[in-house]
Amino acid sequence: MPIFKLQTSTDIADRKEFMSEVTELLSRVLNKPSKYFMVIVEPAADLMFAAESAPAAYAELKSIGLPEEQTAAISSEICGFLEQKLEIQPNRIYIEFSNAERHLVGWNSGTF
Picture (cartoon, rainbow, N blue to C red):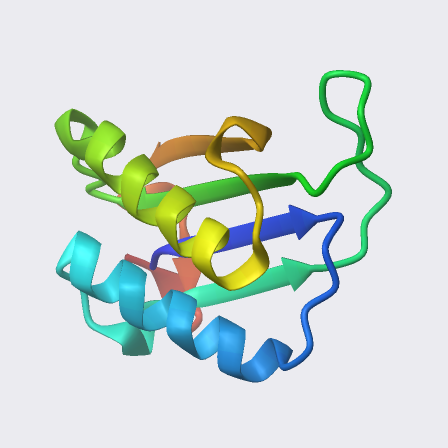
């Protein structure tokens, strides 16, 4: 049930392709099937970081069984991806990680 939400001040030319690439990246990094991923992208957000309006991003990654000991490595992967695809410097990206409890995530008329 991984959910990745991205708010960025950068325009994204092909959002569907970008979201597919994010799904592939996170599926590989989290070792989870892509069929369970939800990706939400909110480009061109009004966003200021460190009192500057240069490109920046805020992301949330929530997953059941998030490997908390690997969040630094996951952060590196996500920041590298955003730097390559959107030209956002890693020091202008915040990522919030959340580990979700199965019984607190609804899906398909039930919970996980």
